[in-house]
Length: 462
Image (cartoon, rainbow, N blue to C red; front, side, top):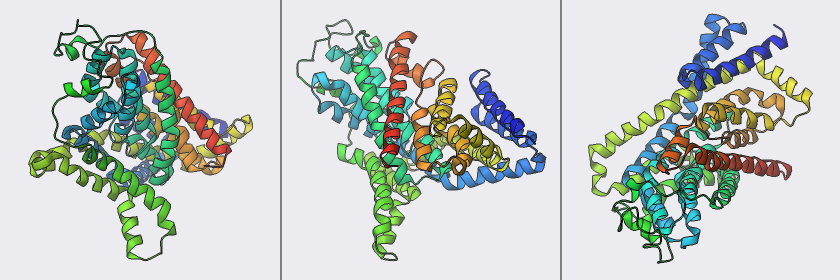
């Protein structure tokens, strides 16, 4: 089988993957499975061999990441339903003066984007942000996209988001490194996007249904209630809550601290000591996320013993996890097919012949998948699955590929994305305004993160 035939088969598979999802709206899991089976057959693996490779790749991948995705989704649901997400947002708003409100929203969104999917964060918090826009007179074309972009970037670059979790597992990147370096490229991306969005001049008022309950109704002057000099007015409009800020932050920060500490300090601790064993046990990513779920139970006060908390909430998290689990497993099967059929070596040889920097390849693949399919999660996972077999041939470190996939998968959000529509619609924007705000901001965040990654490579950080 010639090298040209192998490369053409691989390129055709990518085209079919994108076409089925974006044009014909076939479910991504079904599409990935079709592509994996077709690749195995056309590259000479045979029917039985193809099925064996798919089963092996699927099982091995889920064995390493399955529980992580489940516990991460359950944790996000717990923070959503307990009121912790609202408390974090209100507390961030209270810390900033009126002219710094966009940065307060960016801070809250960035923190909440670690455990929550960006669409969920927008749906939950848009009433608060709309009330804030009404009180301060700040355009929803600024505040709505800022609310989205912070969570969107974190969902793309930092576990326990399903995309980063799956990507890190496929590339065999330690969770401590994924979190630490993910924040290093993600936070500058949020900052750059927020600077751009803060300078938008077009004024868009909030949707009337989000502000009609305020004093004076939606037609009252924007300055009403805004003279206090801070964002407390918006917090007063939120539904009452009983959770504290410290308790709300603990389930988010605890697993990050445990995983990073075990990753950095574990090798330096005395081997075999009880303290070392405890640190490594608690810092193992699956255990750290499960402990975070336990730490979230006190947020429900006396309701933590109820069936709705101990059983129904867990089932809700499982339903959210089903899609990432299936995508991750089939993505692992795709990586196995690519590795076993010799596609990896042929692609690596072709890349080297162009003289192109290898690190740009995962970035461009992730960007293409995200832009065409509208899913940053799919962009992160698909590009990681494609790149994993190429690592030895291209001479790239797994963490570099992970970060390239995560930054590339942010480009770009537009009208084929659910997050784009949720944010645009609830922020009272037109499609054109959504492109100018969300679309451009997502490009800025991704390019900024990729630029930071290249600086990290040049300085030897990664």
